[in-house]
Image (cartoon, rainbow, N blue to C red; front, side, top):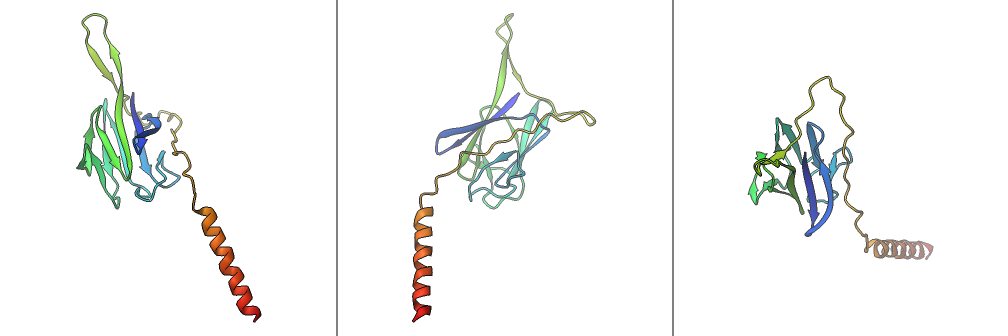
Length: 155
């Protein structure tokens, strides 16, 4: 099975197994992989399972999609590839099955579902909420502006 390992600022924030034929990535809540950052477009890209592999397609994003530091509109993905979407880095990994007979290694990748079969549950990923340290300051400024307006109107 292919998995996406999501990192922000070098820190792993999640892992998403690719179990659907199409996995969407973007800032909007309806994406299977939600990356809550303004550098990510609402519907940024999608990963499509094909046979035993997968590819990524950019969905017309503002900042583009990169694979291994190269711009990518539509590109096949291999284990070890790194996708850059906004400030996020997403590593492509695959489960490995070893054969006892001859030390042969086989990458196990999921195939897409056939039409008519019931779809497995959608994986969902939303990164940890960012701290809003300037929220208090903004509220304080707003209250002060309102108080000043009230004082000026009372004169």
